[in-house]
Length: 75
Image (tube, rainbow, N blue to C red; front, side, top):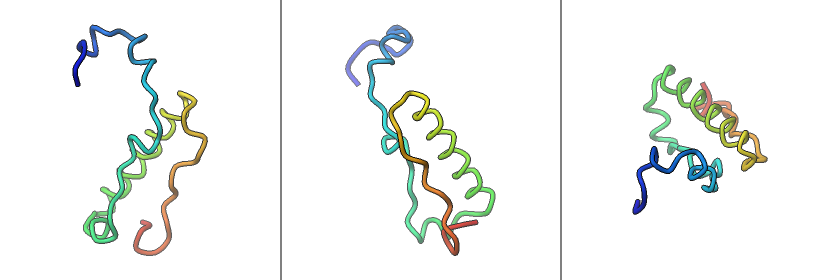
């Protein structure tokens, strides 16, 4: 990034950035997901939900976050 340090920019500098849920979302392949433990999957869903809520609060994400799928993708 070429520009002033984030703290020097102040809040008005951050407000100019467009952020979408897809910009902060993290996805796993089926193989990667199978390697996660239950607590890691729970953490993943908690972080994804919190990220979605934060982005939605900025008015940039009208969609719901991806829901846990049944079967090997779910808990």
